[in-house]
Amino acid sequence: MAETTRYRWTVLVILTLVYTFNFIDRQILVILQEPIKLELGLSDAQLGLLTGFSFALVYVTAGIPIAWLADRSNRRNIVAASLAFWSLMTAFSGLVQNFAQLLAARLGVGIGEAGGSPPSHSMISDYFPPQHRGTALSFYSMGIYVGILFGYAAGGWIAESFGWRAAFFLVGIPGIAYALLVFWIVKEPRRGQWDERGTPPKSSFKQTWDCLRQRPTFWWISIGCAFSAFISYGNGNFMPSFLIRNHGMSLTEVGLALGLIAGISGAIGTFLGGFLADKLGARDARWYLWIPIIGGLGSLLPAYYTLLGNNKILIIAAMVPAQILSTLYLGPCIATCHNLVSPGMRAMASAILFFVLNMIGLGLGPLTVGLLSDSFVAPFGEENLRYAMLTTLTISLVGVFFLWQGVTRLRADLDANAAESARI
Image (tube, rainbow, N blue to C red; front, side, top):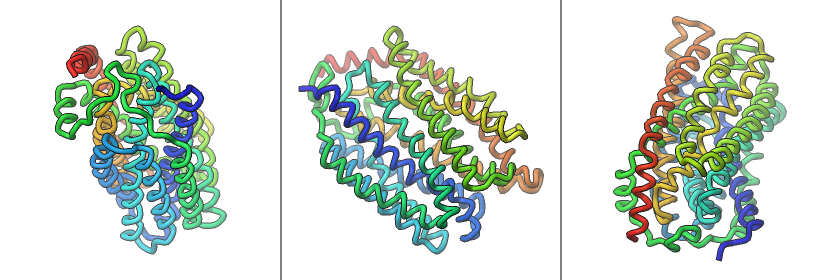
């Protein structure tokens, strides 16, 4: 029996707040990286490694076995345990004395956060029917930007008032208590309750992999999302440093400005992407990919201005449309990937999607900006970070091409999944 609409939305809000904690704990390092760099004597490449590649490597690697477990066991328990663990490791980050210790703590955060999204995605797709999944998954994805808002705004103020170590403690400890709330309130939904064939058989990793190999759209979407994330993580993680170094803003000013802009605009764009995709996709499923394509192209002009402009007020104003348009992609793309596989494969499909997305986006984005910034010191001097971010922004254009490739195959792959489902 499907749960009531009120309870479904209650669970969605709870899981969205879990994702909010995920991004508070992940992004707190971004706003703190300048004082940490100063105290621990780090380079931009090391900062890119901390906020990008090293975190992404353990995050996506641990995500595969955890998703395999989630497709076979209680997903609520996995989410609650993962939240408690990554929150504890965030608090430990405030105790480090050198780069190696901070790296180890952030690896722990990555392992814990690997158990957050794939099980949550799978539960949401079982709580909500297909025609509402884009909206529901976009609502969940708003947790990214609520987390960024709090992490930037509160993190910058806490760091300037009490030091960067206190910021890690104050954002990590509440997550442990919230994990108990998740365990107490959230119920494990029945798998496939909105699908015609009902409760699906448990799929092995090989079965899921074989299915995805026959769905080219899944891979085009994964790579397209990865290059959208490449710019959001690459330039986003270094935007605080850019505003501090190139425009003389304080840590508190940067935290407040970026927190409000990235948080509110990002949340609006993320929810809008899923809402529009569900509305327009009812007539043509390809709108689930056209929306991200339009958003990616439309965001480029204001994004270039944020890096090339000199007026701080106009730069901050340009970030609003850039952020809204560039965040339209996530909910529609996750929903489409779930519609390409059976219910018993959805957690694993999300984990593989996030593997590709995070290895390219989170793993290579910040590291690329950091390496380019260090290498651009000789030719560009104090403008090195600006030109590193401009280069990264231009590279991200290839993501639009990959999403367009997905449009050309989407209908055929959806029909293939429907035919396969009918045979089960």
